[in-house]
Image (cartoon, rainbow, N blue to C red; front, side, top):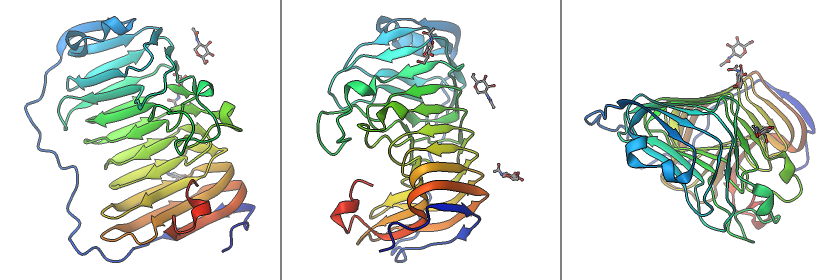
Length: 317
Ligand SMILES: *[C@@H]1O[C@H](CO)[C@@H](O)[C@H](O)[C@H]1NC(C)=O
Ligand SMILES: *[C@@H]1O[C@H](CO)[C@@H](O)[C@H](O)[C@H]1NC(C)=O
Ligand SMILES: *[C@@H]1O[C@H](CO)[C@@H](O)[C@H](O)[C@H]1NC(C)=O
């Protein structure tokens, strides 16, 4: 295989790609029935210690988070938010260190069709990854809580925050309503020698825009696991494995993804589609690339792999 070509490329391409045709129709996924909207109480809650993470506070229409250290081994869980809630991060939050599954931070609305705004105001969520990194990522070594941040339900906006030193995967986006993630910096640059599986954005939602973010890591900048109507634009990715569709295993579909105006530097790949060897009842359709730039690529600038995981030496890439 041509594994070490294309050290420097600039890309303008359009790709449409399908696996073996799915034997079942592509059922629209995530079409949640709007339930009774949970109306936020007109109150402002302040969270400045783990004890303030109460269900009463989480029902408020505005939630302000001050600087504090989150209890090791517990999720800072902002789930069940009222429709229309705003969460402001007003100080840095550091997560205590413990070898457990995670996630460290979870946010979502009570109803699938609800929306929220998370505004990080330029503050930092610090996962203290250096205390976990052992060069083995999630394939071995100590248990690393991941993802560090999970968007688990609803939609809206998640913006203006720095995710520092994630133990492994940084942000998992499982939105169930239209969502925009913007102006987020994921900085795992301190993990250059020992960080692993530090994906910046792992997505499973549809109707999703990820724009104007910075990702410094050691794995995929974007990994789209499933979903449709996804825009990934004007992001900067460095140090990792590039912008990926996949890996796609059996039963997963990805369609209508636009990847534009991104810059990828000093990474293993630039733009990649990876479908798992032997996957069935799965498809990748209508992936459009335009205006992307890649430089300092050690493997391939553009790679379409239909045999992902066939060769053991590629398992962790
Ligand atoms: C918040 O964290 C960032 C990044 O570590 C740091 O530069 C900044 O000084 C911290 N702010 C405060 C008030 O500690
Ligand atoms: C990004 O967030 C920073 C910190 O809050 C802010 O100063 C800056 O204006 C934001 N940029 C955009 C394009 O929203
Ligand atoms: C990409 O950049 C081009 C040229 O500057 C611009 O016309 C287009 O709107 C951009 N696309 C996105 C999705 O930002």
